[in-house]
Amino acid sequence: MLATMERLAATDQFAGTGISSGDDAAIVWSPLTARVWTTRLEPCAVTCGLVIGEDHLLLIDTGSTPQQGAALSMAAARALGRPVDRVVVTHHHDDHCGGLAGLVGAKKPGAGEGDADGVQVWMHRAALARLADAPAIAHPTSLLAYIDLGGLAAEVVYPGAGHTDGDLVIRIPEEEVTFVGDLVETSGDPQADESTDFWNWPSAISSVISATDGKGRYILGHGDPVDGHALMDQNARISQCVDQVREEMEAGTPVEKIQSSREWPFSPETMADWIPRIADQLAARGITRKNLLPLSKR
Ligand SMILES: [Zn+2]
Image (cartoon, rainbow, N blue to C red; front, side, top):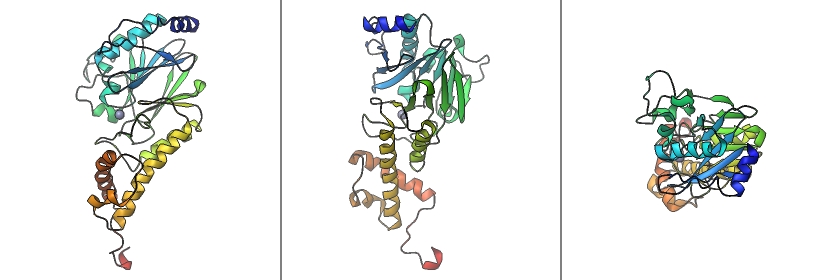
């Protein structure tokens, strides 16, 4: 089967499925290892993964639309003779989970017998809760999950709140490959939304480094694969943002003056968005101006 995949890839037949991905671009799966493949889809240049076990095909992230989700599975079926039957969604953002309905059908929670067509899906409970029209899935996940693909395992880990409050990381130990979703981003500044936990984000990245011993390749939702150094670098940059906001708050700098008071590791646009939100999250944790308090109250 793998030989077939490699031959198809070599002749470019695997790339040309003729299936529209929503913007008339064909789906192109590229091998990262013999059993881990990736493809990049528009919009947002989002990376999806395909992990090939003897018994099951695991798709990691589903694209932006139900049509893309279905096309990803059909492209795998065209090449391998069987469709995707296992899916992990790294988090709730549209470019990662928008294809889910095309894989499991549009069943609503409580609809009954689980996922359609034998497709089993893992997604964090917090991420599911953020979907307006969440399909029923077999495996709402809180902390850990193990997926036996047949001769190959996928470990699903919740590293704690970070980019969102429901990011899942998928480790394929035998291939030394880890999918980290948008927990780490190199194609631009990391993205944040209303569910981002700036305080905990560096810890979440540290958890991924620890769980993987910093070894192997990390596949990002946006950007090329990286090694452990890139994770440590992003960890340090986000920590720097939080630490600098905290130091300025403790020094009594008004929030609107914090950005101009320091150098920052991300763009001015990103920091203009982040600093007030980091300040709000720190204030909620009791970080206040230190210098004006009398000694007895410090
Ligand atoms: Zn995201």
